[in-house]
Structures are given as structure tokens and as C-alpha cells.
Image (cartoon, rainbow, N blue to C red; front, side, top):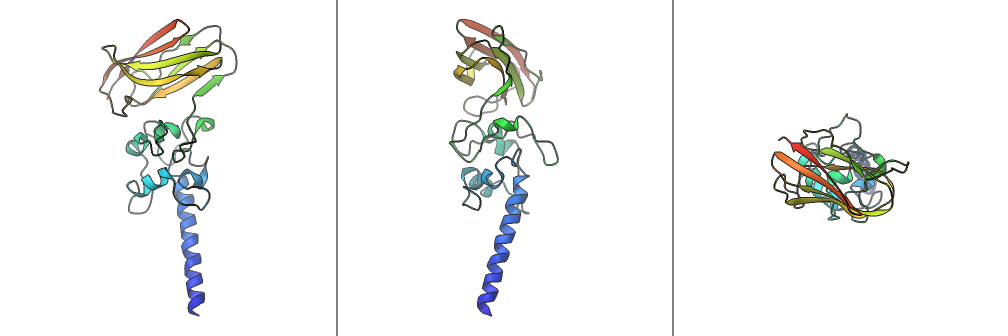
Length: 219
């Protein structure tokens, strides 16, 4: 009888844990893409870096995930992209009940350093020239989207500068295929520090091309 009681107890614990995992999938943006693997190494495996960080400081008294700006700003797996960037909610503004933000195709796993966030390719037509469109929204707080086009395969950089012309954030520095692209900036510098309200410049450079737009951040 004692052995049966123990087996029933273990079964109950497994069931409770599975329900908790399923619930938490819906408590982070785009959590449905990786399901339990968002926070665990494999289905039923131990917690990954993201899961451990949540467990150690981002659960409320009911065991629910406290998704928000603080958790979004962290880079749990140290792959150079914040949790928010990987889950397509750079500013941590998403809340349960809202539609998943961003592009699901670009969502990467915040607990897996080998899963890295991409940039959005908005269309497959080949643009005629390099362009840099005005960011939207503008003014913004805390996140804005920057769109640009690349007419041929080229090395492209997109950097954010403050009003004094000092570089504060490298958004992009890589070779791109022809296409239309979108990147988001969450109002933070390369050290993941929140920058002050003010005028900022987004500068696109490639093959002798230099394009700049002015952006207004209002906290």
C-alpha cells in the first residue's frame, strides 16, 4: 500500500509540473513557437538559461512568469541579443491576452545561445537602390522600427548615434542579400543601458552609400 501511495504521489507531481509548463508557455511573447523548450532543454528536460533566470527572479507567488521590461532587457543565454529581441518584444510591452508581437518566423530561443534572432525581410522584390526610411513610430517610447532596402549583396552597417554624433548602438554589421529589411531599436545602448530622451540618428552605410535619419525618443 505504501508503494502505491508513493507512485500516485509521483504521478501527481509530474502532472502538476506539466500543467505549469504548459501555462507558462502562454506567459511570454511567442512562447508557442518553442513550447516547453522555451524554458527547458528538450521536452521535460532541465531548465535552460532563460528558464533558470525566470525561476530565480521572475515568478510571482502563483508561479506565473513576470514578463516585462526587466526580463526583456536581459540576455539570458549571452548570445548578444536580449530576451525581448529574441522573442520579438524588445521593450517587454506585451501582455497576456494580446496578439503575439513581431514576426514569428524571426523568433529565436532566449535560452539557447545557438538560436539567434534574425532581422525581418519585408519583401522578396529586388529594390532599385539603397534607401533608409523614417523610423516608425516617431517620436517613440520605448521601441521603434527602422526600415531599409538593399539592392544587391553587400556589407551593411546600421548604427545609432546620439545628438553629439557619438555611436551608441550597433544594430547591424553584416553581409545582406538584396531585399527590404526591418530592425527594431529599444532605446538602449550597446551596454543595454536605457538612454535619455532626445534626438538620435540612425545611419546606414554600405558601398560608399551613407543614409541618415533623425529619431526622437521621448521617455
